[in-house]
Length: 268
Image (tube, rainbow, N blue to C red; front, side, top):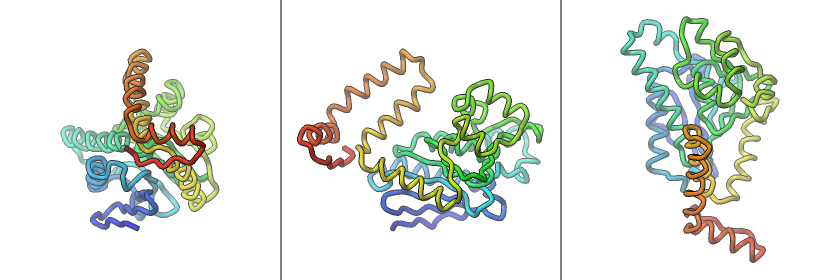
């Protein structure tokens, strides 16, 4: 088991090639302040630049305690910000969400309790969301005279549809776990936090059996497709599909299939 303990507001440990990232401000309901965001930026940048999926083959993101995944951005820090300070803070939050998307390995947000505002935005930046039945999602910024600033206006509509996203953002209302599941925001529900984490680990047990290189490229192509037309996206898919034929994993996977044996993928 590998543990990193150089952070004050987050914890990160790796068990059996799965990284467990916890936002650890339980007394503040894991609210996002500048320190949390900067520590997340440091960790995620390290995973992108240094790990390359060799040691960490998947990441589970959750919040400390039982009450909240991330209750939102830290309003106490935000209330006296100037326009320029708000721009820096918003840019930092957006940068962290983009880093989640750029991780070369799959990331599952495990949401228990509140995932509001910045918490919902962080969860949406992960590859998909699992949640407990007590999970509560929402973008309540309008209730504070604000708008979402960490990507909520963009990602929510891509997940649940433009009209539904507008209704959720305009009203600032809470979205319970059952509704979140019905609209595709949370794709699986669990009774307890323990079952939630176990469910994510079960999913990773399947992912770890397949080619990490193929999973990484699938993530890359699917995420880049958000900014492309269908024609452009198909061209990008074709480019990556053909390029992967030079990989060791492709040769191993196809050979194993023909030889009727289990493949031994290396991620190359």
